Length: 420
Image (cartoon, rainbow, N blue to C red; front, top):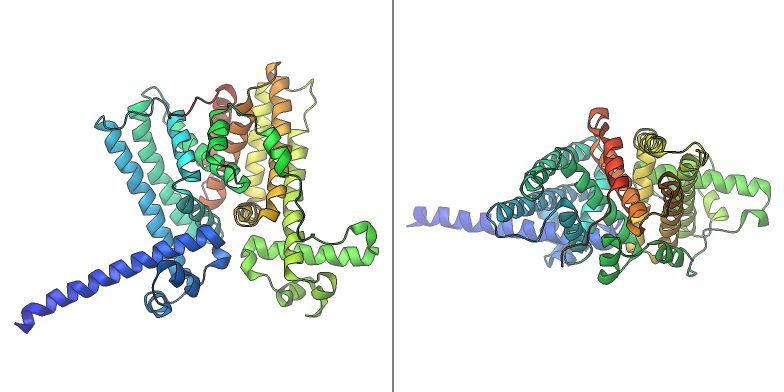
């Protein structure tokens, strides 16, 4: 009797283990969405999962182990969901999608709505993983599988689509979610923006106005030159840590060591760690804005045509992916922190507004008329989505070689009205 009962007890223990680990993974996904990688601790995960702290430490030795389990759960879940969607479309059970644009709109609106938690956690995991070879390998495999599933879906709803259009549609989804999440828009506004019925410029202009809150530091003109130079050295040290490790690695002691000064030194120039972090965040955004402004502004109006605009866009994309890839991981990590931290939101909106106006100007020069409301945003979003893929998954030049063609399609095509 006892021998017969032992396998039953073993299966019960195994089932409880699977259930507990699943709860912990779901709790980690919630924490990632609410507080980012920086806020993920055993205690925070236990609270979100509704399990004891002892349970999290028993099943997972370290924060890295929890992140690995959350990544596997989240990425496998997305693949399974899209496989089910492909099956429903093939069986005639899903009829809402007449094109890839319809699918893009639906997935983006879901990511901003009912799937918001998982979408935010995914963005955190992609950027965090992009700093490590194992994370980049995992992301690359995931993108390859997702591309295959979306090619299958494209073959069902858009038989004339080329092999690469599915991958570009995925990049557009990622770019639109990175564009819209930090702005904190409601669902009706998101619908209008994604459909191309609303010009994002008034929204970006409004959000880009700071609402107050902690200053990034005293204005440079108010300080002696040597003081300004030392502050800048500390900011550069903080940026180096954000790029390599994320904000969790920042401490006054660590920054002092990198800047070559005594441990108590940074506190003289920045009253709090929050003030130093804010200054580093502002500097990251300003550096990115300056690069994009210089790139898109480098052509004279008399020299520009569609081909040159696409060449320039592709060149800027390669530069950001290869020369500034690691810095972009830090940049977009701060970027997505605007979801939880409204004080970062104006800087994100300001960056997007700069890019949007540059795109509107260049597209108008190429086409000879004012572009539709959604064209510039679509170009921005595709650029962001392709860049996230490049820095998170370490795709090589061969995989990126179709970038120019994808930008050309986005430049010439107007977004369709999303399915209701």
